[in-house]
Image (tube, rainbow, N blue to C red):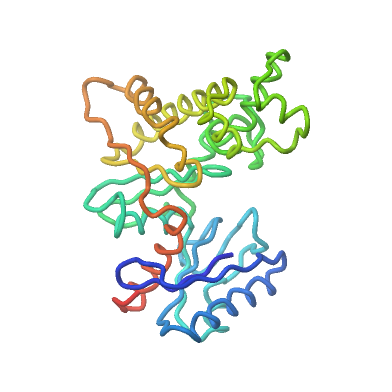
Length: 306
């Protein structure tokens, strides 16, 4: 859990880190303590919460968060009661998109899709800076578009979701599959896998690809293909002017983004007869969700200071 003070320029001027408790009451207490710690050092006018989960249209209730203990919980009201400050709640990908629109890669763009690639895939859609939430507050859930019928199992309960082929987790899975197909592979990754099967991560695969590891480069090429495939679906549905690639995997963009752009352009419906969306990487990095949450909170509170 990370909390920060954000100024009117979108700069994080101070931040604190704390473990994320498993219990709802303990989590809300920890959030309030983080706010108070920062409030002791800075003037704070409002609180923004960026949450990886389904946020109801009232922007007060977390319907469901797979990695957090809230189920149908009025989180914004609870944190407001603990801190005495107005609280604005938003999905973390939506918050990141707002930050990139306000301060980063999406400034001035009309229709923007943000694709946050990390452990899974988060998505957001903006039109002229306004977040699209869907009828029930949970759209767009891009990571769970099914791209392979009866494909890899996903934690959501379906099989073949986009994030099972295009994410940091997917990179590691693909590398393992490639090594299983060629048991004679003697790459660095193969030797690491033999020593500790569970040690292989997407971050390690990306590092090995930079070092020229053949298996890692093949895994990265597959990720590029699946990114392009998914972006073509997204573009068919939303017709964005700009796609911003965010999340931890975006740090390795030089390894895959050009190939992803090429594949996207080749499989897009009407390819060659319509404008292509620009595809850029995010500028705010790991601060995007925090900055976006603060930006939304300041706007809701009518405070331009952030």
